[in-house]
Amino acid sequence: MKILSSAALAVCGLISAQASAQEWPTKNLTLVVPFPAGGGTDAFARPLSATLSRQLGKQIVNDNRGGAGGNLGAGIASRAAKDGYTYFMGAVHHAIAPSVYKKLDYSLEKDFAPLAVVAVVPQVIVVTPKRIKETDLASFIALAKKSPGKLNYASAGSGTSHHLAGELFKIAAGVDVAHVPYKGAGPALQDLLSGQQVEVMFDGLGSSAQYIRSGLIMPLAVASMTRSAAFPYVPTTAEAGLKGYEVATWYALWAVAGSPQAINDRMVSDTAKALAAPEVKMLWASQGATVGAANPKEMAAFVSSEIAKWAKVAKSANIQVD
Image (cartoon, rainbow, N blue to C red; front, side, top):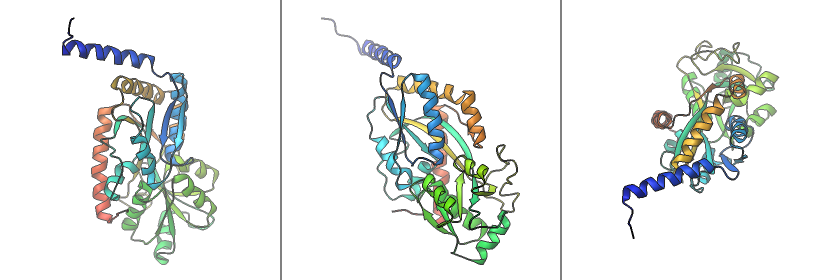
């Protein structure tokens, strides 16, 4: 009986993994979206899933698991089978979470394998015209200064980018605006639309775009260095008189750590193809988003830098969530 060498066994394993990747997928896939429908993450996850489904020949089912500022869904995804059939659509919120939550049941860098940054979107300061008559940022800041603690801002949850953007705004503008957390950007936006509980939101332009176009909410400024091509009439925060206030939201795709590398490589390739599709590029542009890149190594370095960046912000703003 011949005993295979370790090198031969490794080659056999590689061939087996490659064969498995070529056959993959043999069933539908799941994309865990850690926020309710209607928010920014969902706005990019659904069209990406639809495009990938057509490419792969199998349905990608979006599983919306909102709660705990996006951490509930992240924890669920981190414990999924490592078989290449479950993926996670996270966001900048998950790079913020390690600095503001005392305990997390997942590690963004250890429990997930980076695949692609899907989109980068500037945040926009939006108000409800049902309660706010001021049409420019300077007037809104003046209103807030006249009534400290009486205006409310909505967020997708404590510790999310919306929350930190709001706290940064308070520091930069020298105002006191109360924080009202929701279980996602979708519910927060719906309350902003109603004009009953909150007056302002610091939202990703992707989820606010449709409501801005319909006139249901009013944009005061985009928190970026340059104006958005999708909304060229909206000034930047610097142009509106608030210098040094720049915030962007990004969305990214991860696999469960330990999933077969050959399958991860295929998903990276297919995601790059999906992001290059004309209909996806057009949709991203309409939401003021920049198309990301499917490069796992670059994404890993970017996520690490974002975790470090937001740790400094959270410490400066003294934000801690139980």
